[in-house]
Image 1 (cartoon, rainbow, N blue to C red):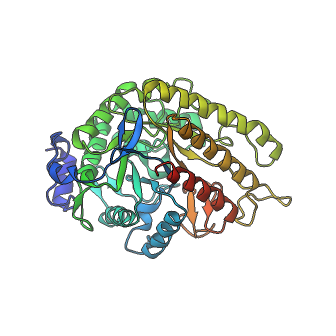
Image 2: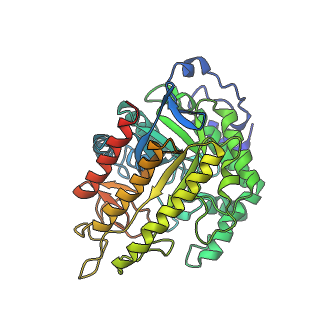
Image 3: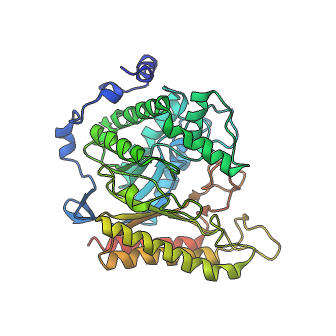
Length: 429
């Protein structure tokens, strides 16, 4: 039995009936129960549910696990209101964090963390994830479960490296140094052992609110290797995706890759997503982060949108060549820069953001209408009733609150999202 799994068992943090972590066989127990459940699958390059094409409009709601904590750091009443709002918009898919790494004393972090040390878990946060999935299921929402993070805001790969090396994380003041540090994660066997133990614990966990193991739960849409992994050896994609599939034959697996973003020429979209254990491809599009758009210069949007469209179309053609569906799982734009300055103000208009959302959603709709690979998307990110100064906006702790957040009062943006959700839903009728 792996050491970290033994620690979790000793602490009572693995639900009864869970196998011994990484040693679990491929033919998971409970398959008979799962066989009757409704899982989204990939058949002939398409998402299907009960034999019919499956399309979706969704959101990034990475903070759902922490909002689900039953205690002062969470807000279950608000979580339920947010889920109702999201479902009311017609969304059916939420991309959420199913991992975060401590300690809670580190800067720029999502706290409290789920994993406080290798193999040690905060039971309250784990319960928050259970509660989130149970409540999503009641509303017909499915979760993309993100299992790691290349970036520091949830601990992620850099925290694994820090645990292994016992060295401080060089936070991204020096971006290049941080990227090189985080990427050392792939080369350390101990880090991979810890990560696989985490995967096994989550996949095999029994949700006390439903009595269903995560691997048997239709509320799980897919497992995602990491948020925006970079500098990975292809073997890591191949082996990790195969490992997840050996634990869970019911759910899809994907990468969380941005595609091949500017500044990462070594990232090969086709090779990454050609892995046998990867069911569908992902792409992220960030005009401001990638230097295409400056909200202080609104005219720059005129070149940013065509660049975004070209990036999407290239990835769509590549996904089609692989015979796999494509999900645009992150895209966002800052609010308009007002005359007095401060695009973070919730009162600032969203003229360009609405235009960008409409354009990107239109690309997904056009691909779907033509029988192309794009079948779903998740905008970044839902903040709902949060505001700057109130925790759990759509922007992670290291970013200015309000940068890419979509608030419950952003009526024009919500109208774009709802119209897109209707379009995607109508394709399944």
